[in-house]
Length: 267
Image 1 (cartoon, rainbow, N blue to C red):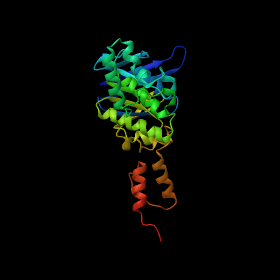
Image 2 (cartoon, one colour):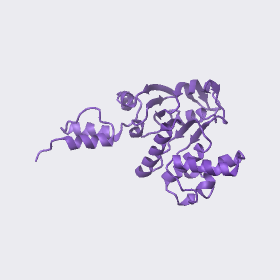
Image 3 (cartoon, rainbow, N blue to C red):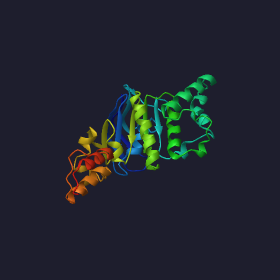
Image 4 (tube, one colour):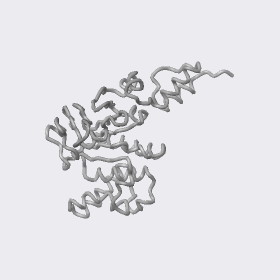
């Protein structure tokens, strides 16, 4: 397991950012971390990936302290800032080439990593000509080629349009299904609903965690923690105000469409 255990972090000369965070990510688990701006999400991501040492407390991978060399990959929101080579094959191969792995082994590993994110055959493509979603999936492949056991994704769809975001989300779910533990930081509660677990961070503390539909139904989500509910949930609420009664438990667009189609509308 990848664990934050009573994790505290303060930047030098600045205010405390994390205040006793406890969080566990298991193999194959997709965990969504949500919270308002300034809650400490990105700092926690860097601590989990070993880029920032805790002020106190621990980040552990199977009971051993995490370092920058641990098998934990970190992906940021801006796909362009993470591209390092002109072609897809060269970009994904950057990590293993720096580890001086055999060239033939690298070619095979690159092909497997691209296939895992839905980009099989993209090796010769020019990175600058890819869409934002394709670039973000190349970034995922660049992590997967190094065989990480866990991924920490900091707003991986935050700069993408809905179509590209959907492609990246599908790739993330596929990697989790393959056994990789994934923590994804997101402001999109619609994406969070599809995770296995949701954790809410507020003022440097994890204030709630558990099954998405249970956690995100709590009134604190909007009233105290300042998060905007998923679009289908807000639409159901507005329709209720207009006199349209829909069944409870609607969280996704697919569920909303199904419920609307089942209504008996006046002729």
